[in-house]
Length: 107
Length: 117
Image 1 (cartoon, chains in turn purple, orange):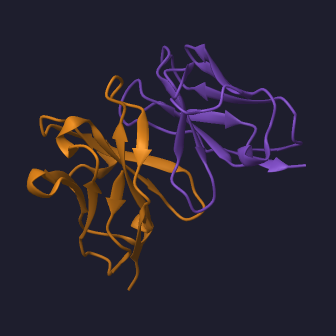
Image 2 (tube, rainbow over the protein chains, first blue to last red; image 1 turned 45 degrees about the horizontal axis):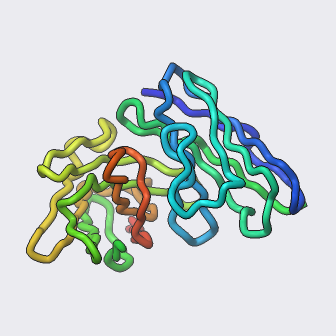
Image 3 (cartoon, each protein chain N blue to C red; image 1 turned 180 degrees about the vertical axis):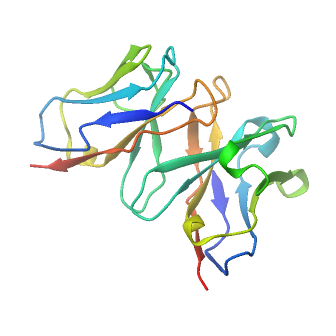
């Protein structure tokens, strides 16, 4: 099975900051990497699919990059509504594993 | 939109069947995934059902999970049997994008399943 590791596990930042979250796969997954945002008590929300494609309706301050084993999610200028937990998910092979999550908190 | 059934409390060894009713489109039009989240934990993919009623279950759940659907009521189901305490979790149904079957773009609100004696 493909193992997904996110870093950092938690992150404190301020409104307006540029933030980068990293996801590493235990083997090459090409570009089959998706990113989700989850707020407490809510279901996850798709942000990015296949590494860099922005889901419809997601603000352009979110972007994704990477291929192979190393991927990043970048938020160019943090907004108050962005404080949440972020998960990466590989869709290269089943089981479609998720990273452990990165909790983004207000500094 | 996906609307899931209400919370369940089950005893160890029992089964649970969670429903996921689609509105606005047909449940046969896309891949439907099921994902669970244990309390305070991350997300765990359980499997999918495709438009042709094919299924793909995570090895961890094979033999215990069954995904079905009833087109007459536009509803998908996930049944998990031989429940254990570590099956306590929120269970989500999630439909995939129609142009990429393995990214989940619409999620149900979640169903809490508690397994306790």
